[in-house]
Amino acid sequence: QVQLVESGGGLVQAGGSLRLSCAASQNIFSTNAMGWYRQAPGKQRELVAAISVGGRTVYADSSKGRFTISRDNAKYTVYLEMNSLKPEDTAVYYCAAASMIATLDSANYWGQGTRVTVSS
Image (cartoon, rainbow, N blue to C red; front, side, top):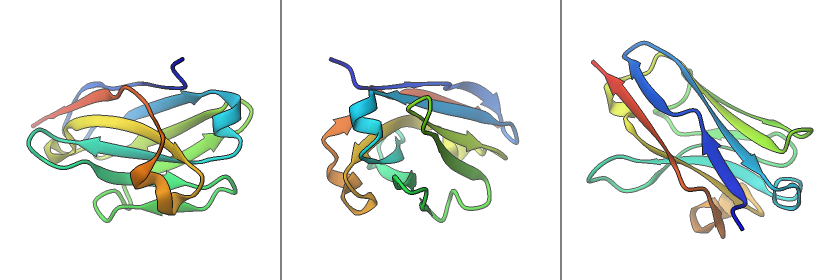
């Protein structure tokens, strides 16, 4: 049973914006921190942003000031609003869920990924 489903990826020009969505099952969303990761070709997966159940947020340095993570508790969905996109943001973006932000790297729940391509 698929429990995390990402959407919203696509092709965008540098400087543009995209909003990614991750729809989760209720039992996962309500009790877990949620995070967005990305993996570019030939690179390791890295945390982009995370949000706790209570709404505390964490951002990678590369995301600060450009990306915003949020969660809609009524829709069991977490969003990643990405602005001022750069070619180096090109990657497959994954949604993850874990009991705490600190444990997201080893999360039990992962989405299938959505591809973001930023052209120069």
